[in-house]
Length: 177
Image 1 (tube, one colour):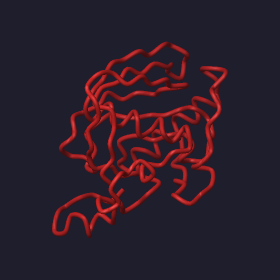
Image 2 (spheres, helix red, strand yellow):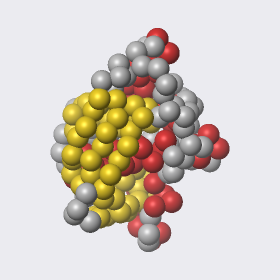
Image 3 (cartoon, helix red, strand yellow):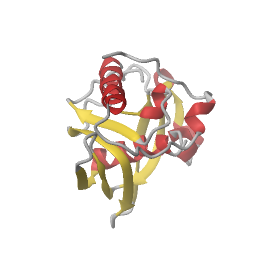
């Protein structure tokens, strides 16, 4: 369909809570998902939330092929998740590096739940109910945060572990966000 411009940190639309999707399988929802997919793949992202392209709906996509931006991460199944709900499971939190297409060129050490259960629907209204861990859990939490107007830098506990990729990882081939 179309590659849409990505909003960047500082755009007030990224700080707004998104509205739930009320109707599934509509042409508008199908076009949004197709555009999100094109945009995510073009930017080599691990996921994308509708607000990142200026649409305040509770829709995220994530997964697919291993992205060059996270070459050591486990593969995550391609998923369209509408109106998601998350529940943390036992296992605590762990911190790891995150980047974001809306915060280009930067990375930060972000604590996230190790395990969680997420529920929601695909774009056709079919239910999704999964229990996940590791990188899969991290990606879901990151993308769903966007639906609530939260960008990952606000979750960083130690700002000494937040900065430009070239400065944090000198001489390493770490892809830009």
